[in-house]
Image (tube, rainbow, N blue to C red):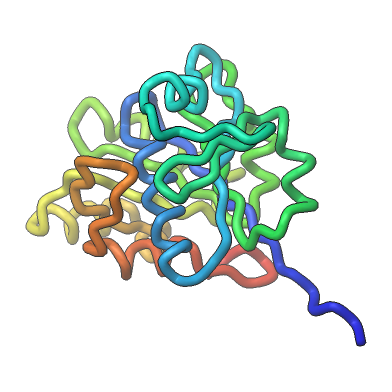
Length: 201
């Protein structure tokens, strides 16, 4: 009897700019997918000057490190060097955190190879130009967009502004602790993580 074929999907998460909540959204997607019964891990994709996994190890006493895997809050974290060996593990999803797309160290080729591509954007006047930069890039035509801190009154207007990308535009409620899933964003993350052969909804 043949073993069932495991379907591994990768989700690339990048910020339109730095300090926009990219890692928080990557972890919230991870939490949602775990809640839905999937085995999921997080990979920090070597964005220059950031060491989230190492900082995690140093910040909390209840972190456990086994080989290349860092365990915290029932989540599994890796640095980019471990990415090839993760394919051999029994994961359903790998969440890859690429940091900011406007960073010179942004690993665009790897981001584009992801089955699902997600940009985290801001809606403040000084943040929208960065969001428009990624929206206007034809390489990201099938990307999904998550906006945080947008009031209900402003969401419809922002969707209109997103034009052809409006059906791939989603809004996330405030998540003060990125490691704790509140359940307020179930519909957002269900839509963001939906997938077919073309990597589109």
